[in-house]
Image (cartoon, rainbow, N blue to C red):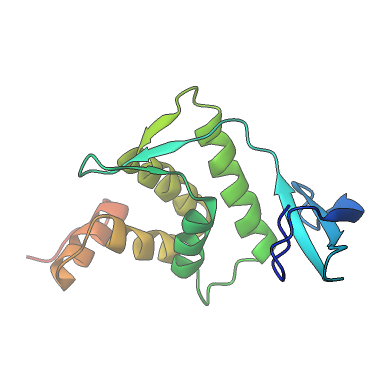
Length: 155
């Protein structure tokens, strides 16, 4: 692991233990060149995933990007951070266990929406508004009507 302070590639692990989420390992490291101390986190990765965008562009799957978008949709919602972390880990495990290394962004979006719908409908609508590219208030109205098909619409 490269030292973030001096760039030395020969750093030493001083302590390893499970992180609070119990799905990653927290490692305290020491750089003998500059004396710097820093922490790294290590996760199990079953396979390298590639996201195929709707434009056809390919990019490496980025767990942090997925986490950011989910956390934005869940901002100020009464959901415990541990539950959000569990949901994100579940989504990543599901993607990795699909057997494919190339996954379409639409497929990822559908899996995320499915997970959000089970946890919080407001976060689900927020995520959908970006994912489905809502342009006007009518788009929200139509989407919410689909969530509640038993409520008759006013016409």
